[in-house]
Image (tube, rainbow, N blue to C red; front, side, top):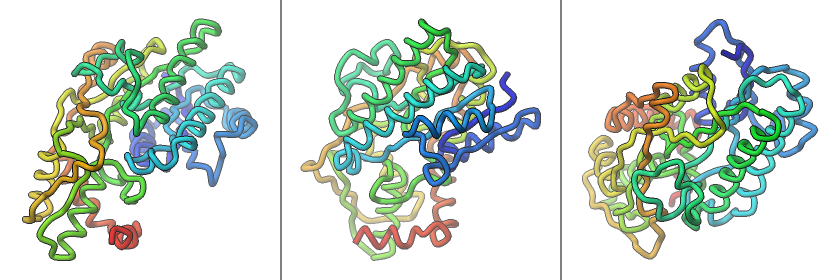
Length: 322
């Protein structure tokens, strides 16, 4: 088990949960890197310096440029370049450094083909083109998957490659310009409640399905995989259960006390029609099983949102919604 673990993207949503989880083991030293304001991972010389300075024996790579459908459509070049650059620089620097016992990369479910048979199996990753609105980000991440496999074959580079589904939970990203499904819905419902609106309108048909993983469960999966030897091939991490967006919106409305109508605008895209993972491999390799029920996780997330609304500047975000 590595004892000195470097975490990229430690100031992000998942990064905070992973840093907390790994730090609970007092036998480890956890080194959190908090983002571009501290280190720019798109620059190779920064990454080389980081490894020499901190001398980790494991790296958990969580740093990513990501977001919902809107920002993916607006910035495809940035999403593809920055994610490729960060991953390639880290993998190459770790190889040259030569002291890394384990490199853990967290990928994305967006890497799967748009029409992958459900449940998604890891061997289907390259059997088609990703859903168009998320394709640059997804292609960048699965290119890094192949890089890990190639480095293992040529250099014996040791890595684990996890593919989590959509995550949610306390400390999620509530910026309406880049938020994912659950925080975006919470923002929209809260704004409707404040305005005494009689309805909200959501993108798409509401019939697309998604699988959601509570952030603490994903942190546990990362912790668990550090304790075992794995090959660099993809490993799905999720609950194995899906829910339609219209059902999710209804659940959140009930939790938040919104009694208005939920309308759908089919002029906007649904994104991938269905997302639900086959999670047998993670269970087999390191015993992972998600523990948090969706309704409980949603309640926790809504509770955190209301407690931190002003402190996190969420009132300003809400004003941007009009």
